[in-house]
Image (cartoon, rainbow, N blue to C red; front, side, top):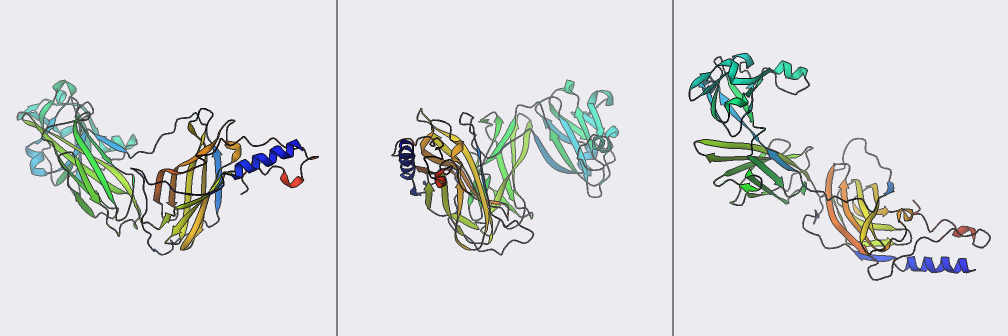
Length: 424
């Protein structure tokens, strides 16, 4: 009888935390859809069976936040014609050992690595002293490098130091792409987009700085392009703080592929010039669905059901991480859950079914669901991401651990095993 009473009290304690809650207000860096669009159903073979699963996490393991990729560059690209190469194309270097790749464009004559010449102040440097390495495209392709046919790569001998050089190709004909890479340079162009995922019709901020570390070079100039997967480009205008705001067209996001963010930088230094180019990418998606506000939860089963407003038919995925409060009063990650299903247009819901057995001893309410994402799996787009989605049980005591198994002689058969798992 005491066992049955304990079981009833534990169940009542769990049930006290069942109910509804609102999503937390979005935080800086969250991706939140404010509308939905109606698109045709995606074509192709797409899985339509619903799926739901979860796995246990180590509460003592570090949780890393998803941050946009930051690119760093010690290189730049430029196009030159045969007239510039036959008289000597000027290259300013800021460190010894610059690597130069010259690639023919279209029907231009291939680049002979052995015949390239290096000049300084208009005077030719002997072939034995000019380049530390001369490599053809065929040699690099044999080594597994993806390089255009007819290209050549040379490295300026480190003993020549830095400064202005001229690279000369006597038999040049046509146009060429010149790539200059300075692996030992202390001058770096850094660029970052404020978000890795953006919704069509939204904005993304691009920040960039050319200099040593975080210190920008005085008088440096920045320019950029935002390029769609189809090749359509939009100018980026940077302010004096190195920031540019790009608006994503409202009709973007239906073509496959990432959007390219290209940044170009230059600064004068003495009689020379420092040049750097870099690029990063963002994913653009149409808001085919969005999360609703109300969240229903069942603390006994650790189930969270989130409404989804579906504007376009497709397969949608919800994922999230459950944080539980430990004996020291700190919230730590204990379980991660994913679920996905095919939905037609309308008001739907997806559930995060965390497993109670994933709770370490002594862990319980308050609970938080963090790192929540809503994805359009059928169109490969991220629609929402929230660092903190919902808190529950913030006013009550810690939930006790699941009750111990009850003897079948005392407890009814239908009561066994239901407190320790989420029925899928």
